[in-house]
Image (cartoon, rainbow, N blue to C red; front, top):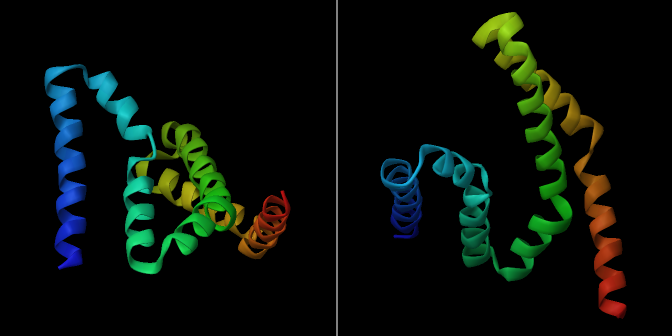
Length: 124
């Protein structure tokens, strides 16, 4: 039953973006699509399925910084690689750079940093 709710919410967000593009402005829809709408949906269901503590910890301290750097490195790489290497090789270059970024920013590093920040915030 939960999978149907996930599908419904995702489809509703996509249809809302399409409606914004159709009736308002395609640029506005593109800007809204760039915001972390998908991340918000995922975190909501993380909290719903695994509890608020897991969702907040994974969002802020553990996985978000690493994922952000990986997406940023992928996006910048394909921006410059597509004109030079084309779609296929440019995408492979983007995946390679994002993978290297994920290896450099090891999840355990961000997890330990998050635990330290959580301890500091609990003291205050």
